[in-house]
Length: 239
Image (cartoon, rainbow, N blue to C red; front, side, top):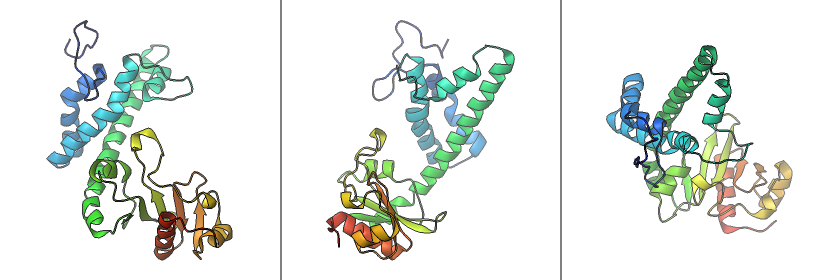
């Protein structure tokens, strides 16, 4: 079968050399058609979404299929589907199929929105003054900066959080796929502080909090967030 990856001479692989499995082969054959017919985005978005999902979610499923060993407490899509289909009954199979369909549709929808938002990042990068990137709304930026700001001009990003009515300062990661190691963490003296404590340490009168892991801080105003960002970058000592 065209979608069987168990042949001895099977060698279809991802860019990093990891072998594909049945899910990846099906995605390669029909993924673009699914994206185009269900969501009808522009052609360049179809190609970008197909590649993005293929090299992330679909690849992860293939790695599991090919015997990737993960700790028991790590949850993956493959594990969730396996639990739903544990008795191999038609009822269980339909539940698993429904979950897989919903997961894929939601993943595609999210990827389309992210890529549309990221089209806005290039002009915002041109308008901003490094090392602070200022956004007019929250746009997923980590992977885009990793791929497009290769000289690492930007170290922190400032953007509004409309849900909390705050402005956020967020550190840029060195390699987004490998966790939260930052180009430049917030000063250690800020970690875990809130309200008046953080205001005293930073001198920013509307500072709200700084995450204990030093990757994020916030203020109630854009001006306050910009001041936090500047002091984050210059490592201003406690006042």
